[in-house]
Amino acid sequence: MTHRTIPIVPVHNRPAEDKIQVRSISGVFTRWRWAMVWVTQLAYYGLPWLSWNHRQAILFDLQADRFFLFGAVLYPQDLIYLTGLLVLSALLLFFATTLAGRVWCGFVCPQTVYTELFQWIERRMEGDRQARLRLDRSPWTAEKVARRGGKHLAWALLALWTGFTLVGYFTPIRELALAVPYQLGLWESFWIGFYGLATYGNAGFLRESVCLHMCPYGRFQGSLMDQHTLNVAYDHRRGEPRRASTEKDTRNNSDGHCIDCTLCVQVCPTGIDIRHGLQAACIGCGLCIDACNQVMDKIQAPRGLIRMASLVELEGGTSAPGVFLKRFWRPRVLVYGTLLLIAAGAVTTAFLSRDDLRLNVVRDRSVMARTVDRGAVENAYTLLLMNATDRVQSLSVAIDPASGVHLIDPPAIVLQPAQATTLTVTARMSHEMAAMRAGEIIDIHFQVSDPDHGSSQRVRERSTFIVPR
Ligand code: SF4
Ligand code: SF4
Image (cartoon, rainbow, N blue to C red; front, side, top):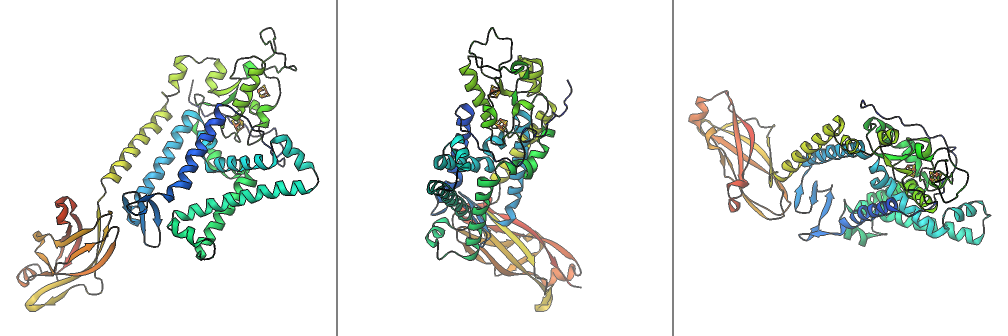
């Protein structure tokens, strides 16, 4: 069988204007979804409150151009690691999608996670699906106002807390908390409000519309999958023709196992009917699997009428070991897997071997070179030194003597933890050497060392020294 991409049919069982009222369900996939909500949200809401060496453990201090990541101190020059991380994340997403469909969408995507949280609040305030449908149709009574108002108030508080937490990654969160609400700065107020409003709108109202109409990943997911990719799928061979009754003994019944109860549709967060095949709107959450398994238990039929299965398994009705292994032994899995390992190795190695000290050298452009003192030549430079550690660094600066250039009054610098400083230095070439090399542009290397920590702390930066004619 060739490795063609799998067909994804458009959504065709629900008018776009229908409001979806999702029915709650329990089961393995529901538990996994909630586990991921807990993991991701404990991390998101909790991490900015962690301390490390008497400062916030994770802080992107844009005003000071410094990023703190536990023990690591990063500067804007280190954005290359962020680029590497984004590449790594994209490859991980491709790899996971090729193997198991839209697991990201169904379990970890912020749109899914916040929609789940907002729906949980909705259920607490307005009841489950039937109660909400009744409430939708009922006139505006005091009870309806109280329930709706309570829901929106709880949504707004959660959304504002989400916005506050986001800003807490960029402004020390404890200071931010003390400034709420009257001493907040303009930008902090704007971003808390903006992100809060985005969360409120996306998770409270737009919900599946984001997945259906806005998310670019949902558009090209089909090209990442093939007929060996695991997806949430309805087993037509077992389910059809649908039976009209819910009689329990299925063994003597020639009809399929689907009793057309539509429970799988009622629990679907995007409101689709998985029995029409894999659809662009399916986010792979598996809730329809939980729902259908409950129905199969009730009619005493085997579970798995809707299950995680590849097209090959569904068409051939087999789960033989060869089919299972083939899932991993596919060019796209091997390519994404290899690229993922290479990228993970490269990013990890580069990050762990980064310098503890950064040095930028800029030649003084206003005074190219000046001749002083019986023909000696001087050039001026501005050095930017950045301490990328949580400890004090005592530094000495020099120029590699092999170039015949030396520093006048080599500075001794004490850099506090995570501190950056600029200083101007002057390099000189003796008049004898300047006479021999008149008119040349000479390569020189600045060297900064931290004598307290041995030569491994030395950083070198290339520059040039101009000798006038
Ligand atoms: S939940 Fe199962 S039995 Fe009920 S309609 Fe869906 S596929 Fe058929
Ligand atoms: S069809 Fe099933 S897996 Fe897909 S979004 Fe709906 S409930 Fe989730």
